[in-house]
Image (cartoon, rainbow, N blue to C red):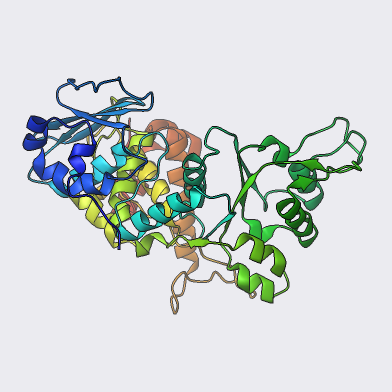
Length: 431
């Protein structure tokens, strides 16, 4: 069971008087932040006033300026200073916003018990030198967890190097990973050290390792076992000190059975596998993650600075087939549709359209079992995507959007109204 501290507020820079005034917000939230990676980097204040602890603050300290107000906003003044105005009558959103603000600086955002337990376990594993394998659906945040393991390890001051094993041809990937000598192959005009040597003393993230070709799997196994790499064209191996973190959206045990992954490499990586659940299975993460994405992409002058309760309720009902990556798409789209409005409401939430495949007979497959798609449905969905893309490229400016699409503003307004009536968006934008 996850252990959270009851006296968590004492672990942060929170004055007694401030804690008393914000008790309803802080008391339920601070225990979720009572983790070693948050200690010493969060300072709470009011109206720009913060107590400075003895010995000063760490360079990565996040100052959270709390203000009770009828209005709600999350304003990012800088990377290290956030003003949060919240309504004490609507604390659920405020607690999610506080969790997001506390994670500034690239730390994981978590409010769900499953995610907090996973982070606690990942922290423990980070202290060791064993390889780490993250399994989970695409878009669940595996790279964020990989960076977390690096930051919590004794290698934190060393390099963190990431490579996507599915992003390039085998020959190019081999040279990229292990390096090559000048003239080792056609076009090798220079000597390259390779990513293993670039990550020496640090961590190498092998993303989508299930896509790694079998021949390279053998070389990777040797690098893990011997702690050395043999660059292309070289005759002597080179010692490296690298910790491997691997991620995959496949089940590697199934890949072994299918003959696509080496069993000995799986055993080498699978010392302590960690599975990241789909977003729909950790629903208490949705609101904090949504606020975290709002902080990343907005929360400045002339931009939305809050998510309404109705918007958060709508986000909570979605099944999130695209996981955290889909959530970020939805929030960025909502920021665009909200324009200069202060808050994102449910009318600004537009979910990604389900992917429709093309069947062998050339028909468009429906996104839901038993559902058929007419040609007009397909045309309408294509039109929606084209309009949304044009709006995005012109920052919501309707006149420019209409010109780029080759239609009149009147026609664009009609199209936006039809999309709104279909529940696809709230028609808005700048004139």
